[in-house]
Every structure is written in structure tokens, then in C-alpha cells.
Amino acid sequence: MAYAGTISFADGTIVHQWMMSESSGELAQMCRDRGIDSSCQAKAESRKQELLGERLLMHTIFGIHTPILHNADRAPYIENSRVHLSVAHTKGCLVIALNEHHRIGVDVERYSQQVMKVRTAFLNEAEQQWLPASDHLAHIVAWTAKEAIFKTIGERRLVESTRNDIMLYPFPTPAMGGTISHGACFKSADYALHTILSPTHVLTFCRKK
Image 1: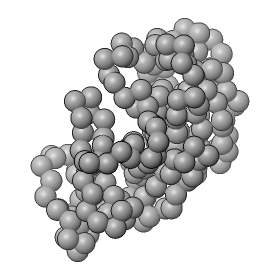
Image 2: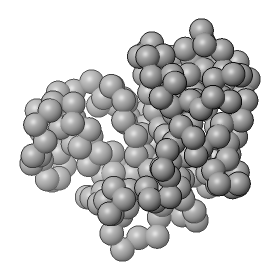
Image 3: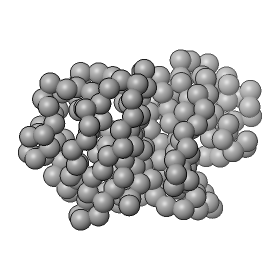
Image 4: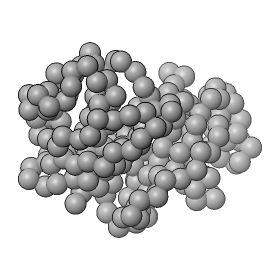
């Protein structure tokens, strides 16, 4: 596992990135080496990697063992802390975003054509009109944007459908290696989005305006 540094935003959000290449067994040994709980009940190898990776990254951020807990909405939080937290995984990458003042959301996805197969499931009719059906990068941006907004909202009962309730505003044509600042709305509230297209994955950060 390699710590890939941080990305800082003007609102005070810091996104920590780790690139994961180790097996769950290797990650468990790294936990033991740091005095962190290495037990894991997850059955899938990928989920074991995610959970153990989270423990290691949180230890790197705070310098001590800092467990990630989840509330009734499955949103992550730190016990007895006012710090707002958002976590995202994709194959080979883990990100944890922190903000001391307000809710945030972050999502990350590797480059893939898979998102095109569910285009009509997550894009509403208006979005399908302006988002080119052949642009898979734009679809990954749209997917991560809606996921990041959903995490920022934080309360699942408020969102009946991410497809219809969250409306993305048109954004510039994305290019690998570039960045996009864009926006969306949910129930008349505006959300600010910032997307980074790295060589391996797309990362989108969100905050409510």
C-alpha cells in the first residue's frame, strides 16, 4: 500500500489517497506491525482489502488507531469527533475525505466501460439529452458526481431516487489528466462538484453550496 498524498480544497476539505496493491493478508500484517486490529469478518477478498486499508489510512492520518463507525444511514463517522468524513473505494484505490465544518462527499471509480451499461438507470431523461451517449469518461464523471452528492446529503430517506432527485448541470467534455468544476441540485439546493481525472481513476468531491 502506498500513501499517495492529499488533495486540498478551498472549503477546508482534505482528501487522503492510498493506492492499494497488497493482498488482505499483507494488509493484515501491516496492521499488526502498527498495533492495529487485524481481524476482519468480511468474506470477499476485495472487501477485506477495503476494511484493512481504511484502518491503515486512518492510522496514517491521525497517528493513532481511529476506527471508522457507521450510523443508521451507513454514513461513516469518528466517535466523539465533529470531523465530517467520507470514504470511497475502487479497485486499487482508497480515498478518505475530511472536513471540520460541514458535510462532504467523495467518490472514486476506475476507468471502465461498465457504467455505459447502466446509463438509463442513473441518468434522468434531461441528463441523457445533453450527455453524449458515446462519451464513457463523461458517464464516469456523472456517476461519481451523483454518488458524491448522495454521500453529502447523508440521509437516505431524503433521496427516493438518485436518478430523478439529483439533477446534474451540464459540464465540459472531460479529458484524462484534466479537472472539472461543475454543479448539481437536489430539492432546489445547489451542490458544488470538483472532478479529477487521474491516469487510473476518476475522483469527484462534493459539498453543498
